[in-house]
Image 1 (cartoon, helix red, strand yellow):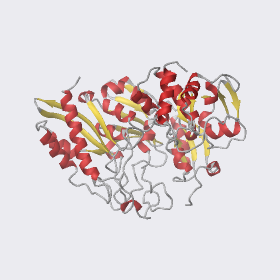
Image 2: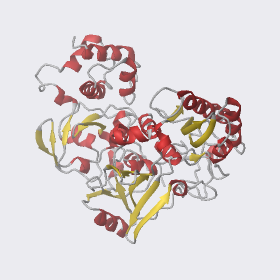
Image 3: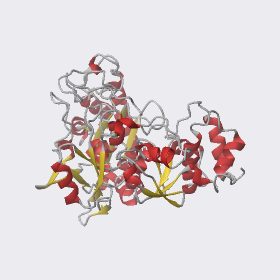
Image 4: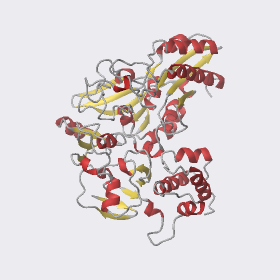
Length: 342
Length: 154
């Protein structure tokens, strides 16, 4: 693939566009054409096409599909239509009251203009911000499988320390997916054969030796909704994001946390990490270490160390391991100090 | 393609599929106010309203705007010969314009902010404008302009 002249509109002439109004037609249209792709908010897709990180495509605009609702289900779950915009979800009282960690993660992501356009489904599929992935003169196993990984020996300050392999150390960029991971969300997908539901932890794939595979979706599969099960303790939860500047920046480390302390001990806990891992990282080791133990600094630190025990630092990102520990401890202490469900 | 721009139904001819809304506005409809800078949605220079929502028009495929309502920075004053709007006046009064390239996007973003939050705090202003980059780094004067516009003193 040749390096495109960035920014010239000439480069986009090999793209075609059509708009569809119902889910079945959308799926049939994209499934029938190997070069076709869904276009939702476009905040990643249009950008990727312009810098030639993705091949030319026939864009099928799905923004008219009726899958943009935010609904409370009879069983207490909340269903986010795949086309619900990040900002709409963040501002929805249904979400903000039940899952503050998700509302906070959304508001702390991107900029106002992007949150207004970007869809929840698209957020799940956004590509890594690894600069080598977007640079056609660099080796990248995600972009060109087998070409190598320039980040291993390159500028890797922002890269992952958890879930990495010798083939890829790109950090997953999403904040929302980290919160959704802590919430055990389910990704609903439709294709021409029917409907599939993926537990969020099974949806995001660690790179291993196939970093080009980031999720189990096949061509033509359409994310229709993200469902969040009821979790009463999440009403007191938080998303703590640490980054190089106060706004409009990806996380160096982030922690999504829901915690319930009873009688001085951890009764329930959900924790996930962003910015440090190749996928939204559910902190199961830390959860295990915390459960039933006293809600004290010492135990919080122990749990944080457990979670990062297998972390693999590279030349420039070793600081993330200590930063992740401190951020986990700070998040745990913050929620503990608030003293439970408001 | 046909859409409503600044309240007037407009049709652009020869639009190729995949062209951005920004390109249509600037090159086909004669509205060069929205600026073309990063083309990656990072700088906010191309900010317009799409159905009342502030977006980066460089990331909107032209087809996505068909049949929808677009308001550009030109639409925030009464017209080419009319008086500038209140946010525009505030930027002039505060001297919040250096090279000027980021200004139109900022004007739309500030208009959007004040329409939702007429009296924003400084942190709220900073967060709302985080997606608008000023390469001259003239942010303090821009903050002054927003405070001025919010106070209705411009």
